[in-house]
Image 1 (tube, rainbow, N blue to C red):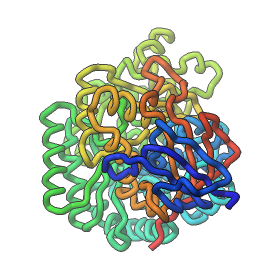
Image 2: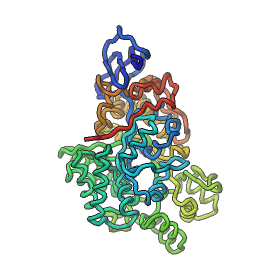
Image 3: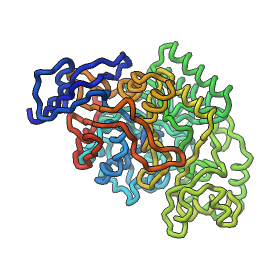
Image 4: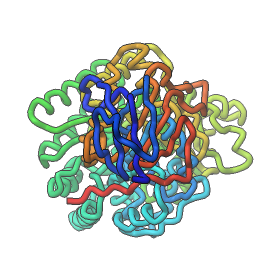
Length: 542
């Protein structure tokens, strides 16, 4: 009984959305042993949860932390997740995962996805997806981790960054890589159709790759081909792929649309697909903004052939002139592969640039494009292209919309019954000031549910637990239930909240009192234990 924990007098929010109820919870080793009135039970550790809510541990269903998990520093660097009540983290989103890996293509992935890597780099000690999971297990994990296979990674493995459609033999090789990954524990396939090289694919190529998912019943998890003017068409594209292959669909950060008309058409398409029987969910963060690689702000054709080709083009005055003209004037068309591959244009003078490595450029960290160009006394387009050349593309950008209309739109998305909560975090080892790392789940519980009443507390917890567990097919987690794993978050419903904003950074959330991962206490009365390594590497095995 030395591993037993008894949680007494708590208000049980079991994760299903049902009304909370008073009860005790007994944990034995890594499982929930019993829930009910357990007054005569003794245990090695007793937690008095009077006036506190006892909930399943929260699941962050969309991150890019999979590139950071092999690093032994992850337990300390990712402390803010425990302080938000998170116990399980899903990685491999937006088309990129660390495995499987063609070692000859490491630098391509390391450059484009640099924001996800530790600042001291990452050594690929694996080749297959299963070997990657084995390394995570060997290194021990602070959180439960579930990893999706990235389509951009497997396309890079096979084709590099060639701006063309895949040939039949290349599609066959990519399908074999995906099939092996799913057999070894991958939770599905993510697409990054806004990013190189996924942006070079067409719909038919994706239909063929997604057919592998049908063999396993695994979900398709896309960052769609467009998030602005053609968002409705981009959403319909992935709906068609999922319906044709009869597979679950989970839309990443489903917050697109450059106008209300486009947004409504996208939402209508999702509703119609659900009514036809498609299993379709989505996720969102409670912050109106986002972060991405700086390479997503330039014409996709400039990356054709890889990083060295990009750097060559950046030194050609005529190509630079063409690129700047497109950034200024070209409007994305559908389908993108017939129109220079553009899907979205997010170049904005108020966008912040982060992740500088060169000492002479570090003074520009988190400065806006406008501020940097003025400091350099350069045209802002030339300034950005120069920085990409100098830093070899290894920069990322941060943008946000701190506006009541944006807040209203995000409230509507979060209130949708099929919307799970996520952070979509990048740059955790580069001091990214975007607030998701410190105040996502707690903002939903505090400001959005309790203070503004957008959703109930029970539904807020469901969106962080049972819902993402179902969407990501994570077994025996996400609900407080006898026999389930003892991932448990205990919070004060009156004080829980985020303490960060777009202008206030790096402050831990308040109100999360205890966190148990697989029955082991990792946050005890607000004190975090970075040595606990209580997490497990989850595998979706059939």
